[in-house]
Image (cartoon, rainbow, N blue to C red; front, side, top):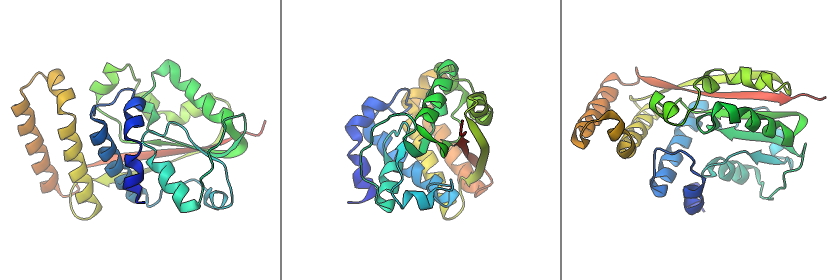
Length: 242
């Protein structure tokens, strides 16, 4: 079964998992997540980044915390032969992965999410927090999400007093040009079109005006050929041995 076929199995559950999604159609949400995942995967040149490859191939217990569509779990489990469903006691997992959760927690709840991440992680093991390019300010204002959760994630990890050896990785993903840039450009235009129903009321414009703006954005991205880009970030931290 292909990864795309596997992720489509999450369709019904995905609709239940979406807390604050700009894309209300679960099928389109799955498609957009699939395309975005692969664009970012190729930008970082891998799925993992943390120094845990050997552990994953020798029976490590892995948790994807807040898996969304489940595409990361599907791919890594397939590649490394991990299939067992695991419980969630303290200090159980060798690796905890989470992506894009800074856009789904208000500031007063985010620290609890980080503490829970470290609760289930074994001392001395790695947690990865993956952050997509921050969504627009309108999203954050609407759902009371503090922007510094994204820009200062390393500081929030430090504040838990459970993390050490905190490091981060940032890549620039070009929007336009050849290869990956063309793919990312096509995805971005596709995504902007999908969120029309959400943005038009806030922008107080007509749908045809929005369509015209999307066309202008697409033309500019293609003309600039990768001069326009967005950043992707992932942060790694090891749980202290207390």
